[in-house]
View 1 (cartoon, helix red, strand yellow):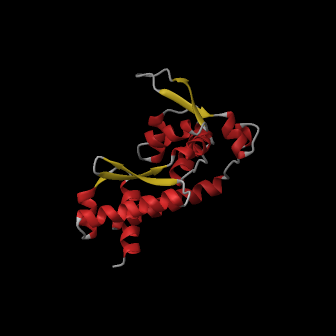
View 2 (cartoon, rainbow, N blue to C red):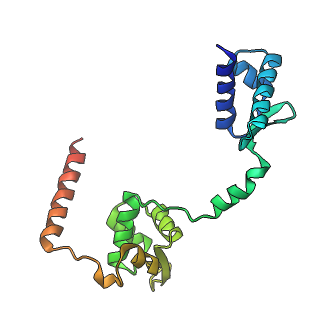
View 3 (spheres, rainbow, N blue to C red):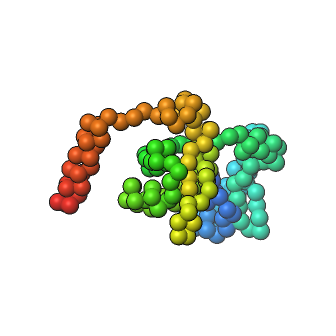
Amino acid sequence: MEIKKYEAVMEALLFTMGDSVELSRLASTIGHDEETTKKMIHNLMDKYASEDRGIQIIELEGSYQMCTKKEMYDYLIKLAAQPKKHVLTDVLLETLSIVAYKQPITKVEIEKIRGVKTDHAVNKLVEYNLVCELGRKDAPGRPLLFGTTEEFLRCFGVQSIDELPVLSQDKVEEFKTEAEQEVQLKLKV
């Protein structure tokens, strides 16, 4: 294998590991002695320094780590400060629709409808500011009640919950039939 290929392998190893990797581990992984491996790593380090790249390889007590150059920190801070795009998975959408149509609702009531635990889904929806705590239910244990937020209305383009589409009874029956068929298929397997 030529030197460029070994350098590419070491680059991949250091990038993937994230933390520092001992010279001995790198050498044994690429099948070379430590002295040759060290020369290849230092060659890579020189390339990163001379090519004005955003990353560098640093040496830490006989170990090596790939990291960002200090000059890039301001850009990293800008990126981290930007709002994240939230992805609504099927599970989150299903949970959100239950909250929207049945609010105020507790996690236990959501779980009863979905048939599975909803802690993660509800927590994500709260994190995305689509669902919020509305108070506590006057019941044993005083469970939290959840409902939708103004952000939910904004995201879904409605002025109030009253504008959410209403399913016809025919559609509800169709969904029930599909669900029953799905359950029957799972029982046969």
